[in-house]
Length: 164
Image (cartoon, helix red, strand yellow):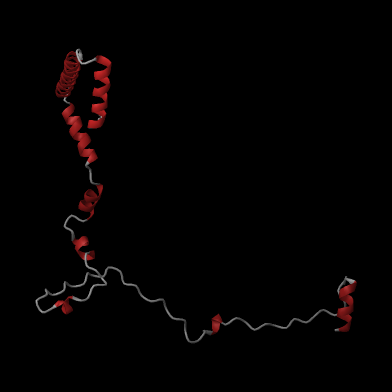
């Protein structure tokens, strides 16, 4: 709590020696030592009373439950719930980029069989080489223009239409 270096204590002692005087210095040191002892005794007594209150109130169980919550490991609980026998972990434990075990040497254990494939992905179907007749779009049909001019033609378009 208080962090005093020896040099600071020496300065405090020198100031006390000058302020109090050499004649009254032993009495002052005894008084300060008595105060420190009394403070330590009071702190120890307070700690004892707090410990007794905890025992009386059965707060040890509460403290234990707080420690359990503080040390709770969600990852391990989820892993145990999802993969209790570690089969998934063992399946994904291998490094896919590692060299094969056959190249490791003659004394190497045989490689485990590959995991079963649960999903088979088929490639999309290819487009047919021919288009069935029902799917061929009809050829555009020529539409004959009505005879005569339309009821109203703006003047800028009337000249183009007449020349065509």
